[in-house]
Structure formats: C-alpha cells, structure tokens
Image (spheres, rainbow, N blue to C red):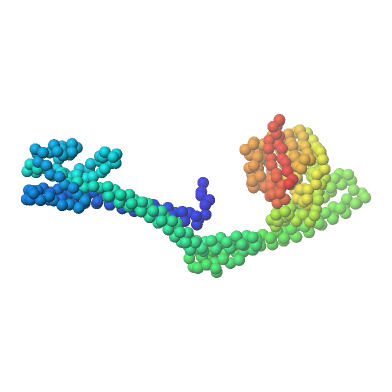
Length: 427
C-alpha cells in the first residue's frame, strides 16, 4: 500500500532523519577517534616517562624525580616485595589497573613498568580526570546531536516550505477550481520549471476534456431533438389510428404496442439526457412518481416478450410507495430489470414486489452466481445464456441512473430455489 502522508511531511522527516543520523555518526566517530588517540598518547607518554625515570634513577639515585599528575616508585629486585602485591609480577610495559580502595571507591589508573639493570620502576598515571572529561565530552556530544537534530528539523521545515511552495500553490488552485466548478489557466501563474510543465499539462488536459464534454453535450442535444420529432409523429399518428371506427381488435393491439414502444423510446431519451448532464440529483422539477403504477405500466409493455412461454407475471404492492424522480427514469430502470427477468425465465413466475422503500423483481430462471452479481452491472457484460444481439449496456445504464438519484440497485441469487432477485432500494 502506498503511503498517504503528505509530500511535505515526508520531505521534512527525511531531512530531519538524515541530519540526526549524520550527527550521530559524527559523534560516534569523534568519540571513538578521541578515545583511541587519547589512549595511545597516554600509553606513549607513560612509556617515555618510565624510561626517563629509569635513566634518572641510574644517573642521580639520591635525587627523587618530580612529575605532574604522576607518581613514581623504584625498587630493586631484592626489595620488590615492598611493592603492592598486584604490581610485583607485572612485566615491562603499560598496564590498566582497576582496584577498589579501602573506602570502597573504584580507582582506575595506568601503570607503566620498566625492569632494567636490577631495578624495577613504576610510574602511575591517574585516569580518573580523563574519564570525567570523557563523560563531559559524551554529554556535550549528546546535547550537540539533539541540537543539530532540532536544527535539521527546523531547516527541513523551512526548506520544505520553500521547495514545495509551487506544488502547494498548484494543489490549492486545483482545489479552488473544484469548489468553483470552473477551471482557469494554471501555467501563467508558475515559472518555467517542472511545476510549470505540470501546470501546462493540466491546462492541456482540461482544454481537451472541456472540448470533449461540450461536443458530447451538443451531440446529446442534437440527437434528442432529432429523435423526439419522429417519435412525436409516430405517437400522434398512432393516436389518430386508434380513433378509427373500423379498427379491428388485432390491429388495435398492434397499434397499442407501437404506442408503448414509442413512449418507452421517449422515456429512454429523457433518461439518457439526464445521464449526459450528470446532475447530482437530476432535474426532478418536483415530480413525484408512484412506483407501483410505473411497475404496472412496464409489466404491460413487456408482456409481448412472454411469447407463449408458460410464464406468469405478478405485481404485489404491499404498501404505497412514491419517489421524487421523473417517471421516465424509473420506467427505464424497471424496463431493464423486468425485461431481463422475462428474457431469462423460460417457465414459472416473474413477481414484482413493491414496499418497504424498495422494489424487487423475483424470477424463477437459471439464476446467477454470487461472484457475478456485481460484474453484471459493468458495461458490455451479459449474463450466461444470453441470446440476441444485445450489447450488455442495460444494467450499466440502470446503475448510472440509480447513482444519479442516490438509489441502490443490486442483484443476488435466490436462496431457496433457482432464480435471481433484482432490487432497487430508494434513498
């Protein structure tokens, strides 16, 4: 999963971590180098001093040597027993000694030993002060690390604000356009850099998208106007023919089917125009539609599809239900749902139930797979066993219409027997 943190936060965090890590590495390296150099210097100094002590004792045995921060002892091989027990077996060289004095305090010192010409010289250097200095240095380094870490954070905040200012400005302008619902040119507000190129690309994309939407709007308006004219002619001619006194019952039925088809085509045009305008709640114009009445009209218009199949179509209105939407929208949605149920059901019943804020179309057909229930609402997807020359757009149109008015449409298999249930839940 990609991180959802803001770019500025990631930039500040990266800069702060980089500065903090670099400070820690520098501090550790400084302490290590200091400890190594200090230890080497002390060892070399002690070795030189103990050699010098041995030389002074041989040259001036009666004059005691003087040292600053150092103490010296000299014994011969015969008097070495006078030395502390821990020193007596030490060989020539520099030794680290840690011991506890009678008061319980731990003492740490370096002891240089030189055995030469029957004399054993000891030179002691107390490193307690060095350890105190080392602790003070460590404290200072830790404080410096945190100070530099805070400084890195402050610099990161300042740099991020400067570096991301064009990006932030671009994002703010896009948010303002989204609120206003109208896009304006962006590139003119930015320099000729990467952000300026991005703004120019957005301007080009916005121009192409606006032109495409405008062409789509003009096409829909032109098509709707051109289609409504012949449909109006068909409707008026059919109405005149139905008033003819010598009309036979068979011809009257055919004219009625033409009238229903003309009305359905008009409703479909209106519904598609609503989708093309993409208005959030649709232009209801205060229309209130009775769901049961529209369902009854759709059932009557779909009865010719039965074509002699042993199939019953039932309507059960459990309670009155009205929706704030044009009848054409609901009619197009129910025509697709009820028409699909009739097409796929070879025998049995197709029952339409209205009530409890919803309408359900229940059939006894082959049913659907649970995993295919959502996929059927995608464009170009048709159910198994679908015949004819359909393009698989009916349920996709139903889904878009329902989303336009805040309704929820779904399909699911029946749990008790074969068949499927298509439902629309009205908000």
